[in-house]
Length: 207
Image (cartoon, rainbow, N blue to C red; front, side, top):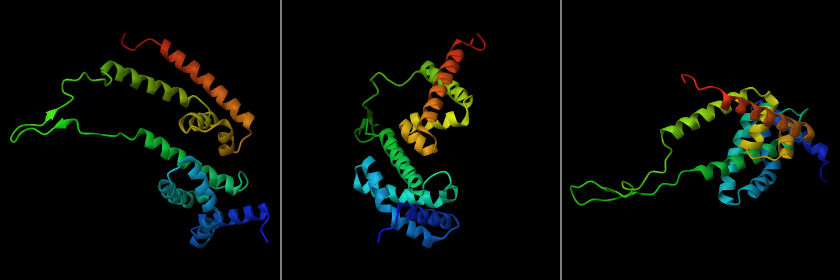
C-alpha cells in the first residue's frame, strides 16, 4: 500500500537528518527514494542524458554536504531537494554557454621559421584600455550598490538575475510568499537604479 505524502515527507526528513550526521545507509535510502524524480528535473533543463546523469551525481554530493542545513520547519524535503537539483542544472547550462571555444590561429612555418599568425593583420575587437577601465568602474559601482541592499533583496536579485529563476521559483527557493518576493525585487531594483544614478553623477576623483 503506497504511503501518504505526509508519511513520505516524514521519511525523507528523517533520512536527511541522519545523513547530516554521516549516516550513509540513510543517505542511500534517500537516494533510492528521490533520484528518479530529481533526474527528471535535471533532464527537463539539460536534455543531454549523459550530462544529466553526471549532474545527478554532483547534485547528491551537494546534498550530502548540505544535509545539515535542511530545516524541516521551513521547507518540504522534496521541495528543498528539487531546488538544489534545478539550481545545479541551470548553473551547468550557464557555464556551458560561457566556456571559451578555441581554434588555432596560426599556420606552421617552413623548417626553421616561425609560425604565421593569421590574426596579426586583423584589427582587434578587444576592449581598449578606456573600455576596460569603464567596465571595471561599472563593476565596482554595482558591487557597492548591491551591498546597500538588505540581505533578502540581495538574495532575490542574485537568484532572479544571476541564476535566471522566475519570481515564483525565487519564492519557492526562499520559502517566502510570492508577493513578498516581488516586493523585495521591485524595491531592490529601484534602490540599485538610484544608487547607480548617484554614482554616475559623482565627480571623478582627481578631476
